Length: 326
View 1 (cartoon, rainbow, N blue to C red):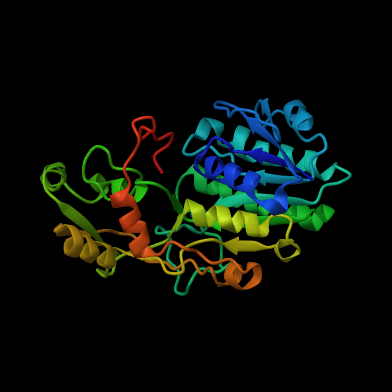
View 2 (view 1 turned 60 degrees about the vertical axis):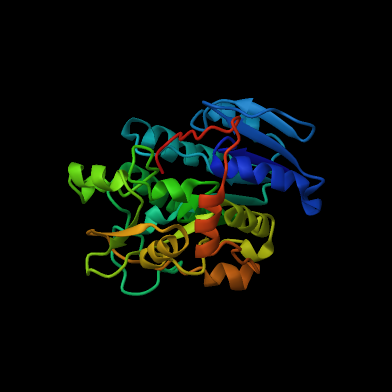
């Protein structure tokens, strides 16, 4: 078996590849990593090809002998690249893959941006059959289009596609900086969307835990997943008959409750709690289908997410570097 991997240099890719290569059940597989702006080192079972997923000639070369595709490459809020890379790139990958005599499975890593995460309202838990409602911006739109393209290639050509839809992916100390009031804040929402500059500066000068409130005034509930759990889900879906033609939500068993986070930090680290009203919606990304069908189970709960982020100590050779803010 031969796996084509896009997005190998990203957060998920860097965690997936070592795990994949160490798994006994994949010991006979080889990997070709299609890298563009950044690259990885080749190895005994890893070939690296430089080029864009939007370049048909490059993709055709990378697809030689491939049986499986794991597509994770993406561009974020870059309107000038969204169509040419994300949409055209997905189309080129699918067109080349469907021509292969030994094509077995195409896995797409999507995001809960396709269902609007905290920006769109849902009256019930968000399942795999819930309406797609992207939030504003080109990145969420491209994820909707990618999901639909893969589904349609199943109908048009019988292609075996699988979509793993993940919320915000955390690793190392990400969650700690997601809650920071300083200039080192990672991701969103940006505090400037809800607070005056002088109030942000006041909070940054102390030890405050943000307690985000949804638009009804209740503690916000937002979905997250640890990168280790997403990697485990990928390995569970890879080449599995139970994943054929399926869409799975891959998330923590419960969304993160900002009240519980703030209370935990107040109790364990003497943080003060800062309530922050927002216009966001509380949503629950239901992962029961993946747990039941794939036998997958997330290992990182809320307490492990918080403690892991606050206790993480970076090596001097591992500086915190954010390629895009989320």
